[in-house]
Length: 311
Ligand code: GRG
Image (cartoon, rainbow, N blue to C red; front, side):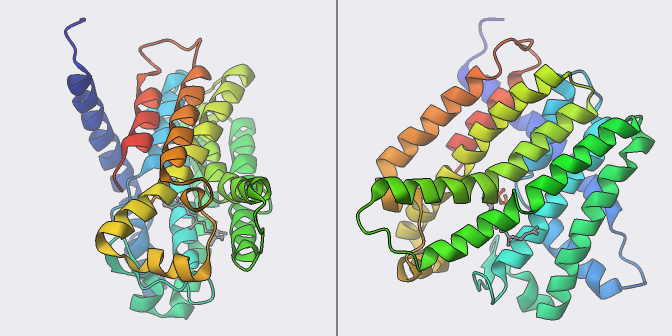
């Protein structure tokens, strides 16, 4: 009833998220058995895939599926696929030829542990396995035409309209001089964020809605919600990078200062970045109007979680 406080709602959904991420972790664990052949590649895949991410993408996928009336099982493989693509992108992002990082989630990066050769192959295999996972959703009562549609969403989020485009723009931007043109810098930044981060979050939500049997109208509403959440996610990621690094002087932040990497706080400041994130959160919620208010709660909570998170 009305006696529910904000805190008790929060803890109800924290439990929901813990429960969901446990099922996701179990499915991810089962997706890559540690056995021959190619034991070493499997170890490297598992190292990043199972090293304690927040599982935001799979949770968005499952919540969207359930919102439109699907079962968790319908979207579980798609949910796993989003995390496999994410893990692949993290491995690649950390390579010496990209960001050259030695720590991720508080642990040595994949190539530091397994070597660059194994790390690259593990990242390749994670993409292939993600495709396989989505494709075999036909075994979970999802009709083939829906599976095909979901595959298209996933492919777009990875390639020239997604992660690859975002990373390429990010790399190109590092040496770019925008002088005092704040508008040009913000446009470039938004391109990076929309492709590097929002595209996969969008695919996660949209694949969930497709697998759950959502109507075209429902799918498009959820797509708009996801775009806002995706952009907000990266704005917050940038803010956290600054606020974290001022506390612990992390390696990334120091390096970003040297490389002059474009981030929202650098262009508009921390305060305005937070305000922008709040505006995106509000807009995200507006796109969910018209859905059943009980069923929409997990997606509203996930948006709040993204804004309020500390890591
Ligand atoms: C072809 C898959 C592929 C990638 C090639 C390297 C690359 C292109 C893209 C890099 C994209 C990248 C690293 C984007 C950053 C996304 C981001 C916000 C990461 C942090 O995500 P969280 O907070 O991390 O969800 P956890 O650790 O919780 O999983």
